Length: 278
Image (tube, rainbow, N blue to C red):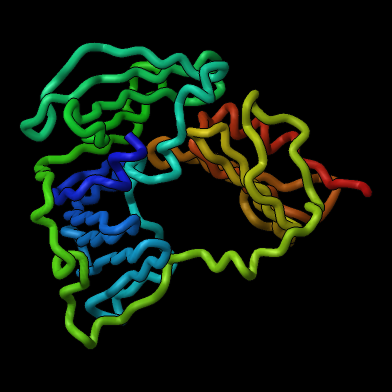
């Protein structure tokens, strides 16, 4: 699945539903001499495109007045971060095969990835039988679908040419980089820690007031900000993403936990956050 995502030439249209949000995106992907080139065209809302030339990612907006710079690319599980080797996480998830199905006119192999414990979500994946590319996925909370990704149309082959992966918006289009500037990320000892995390979650990055974790499939982040004491506490979710905001009684700070985890798990993490004493 991971190799196909990177090394296949393909173009098609997929939808990604997350809570009440529905995105329809056209994708053109080219792999040439070890480098990836990709163009994503949003078909809903304001006209925008995302162009990736290997490690560089640039978002183009047709109208700067409508440009929202604080956004991500809505790919769901159709991303490199999701495509780790699932065999590394057999102590956390149970992976089983469930025959074949038909997605976007192609034969697909169905996989089910169920958590061994109830402190995280499960997945259902449909992989193209010929290439291994992810064609459909469900993020599951028991039998309830929280997020859905699916190709409606897809074509493979060398017909994808370089001209198709360049932005076709006008030269007046507003653009900005989405690639994280890792050179500016400091390696600092964190001032805060979570005394409880679900089994298997490991830190991927830690800064003074930000902590990021993953178990290989799901991710979660903890943010600590100063509080005036008047901010409301909050518990909500969007699709499979839970958000918990709580105030720390012993100090004037606000704890926010955001992650692809159930609300009960997010609450327990938020309640375990405490300052680090060196």
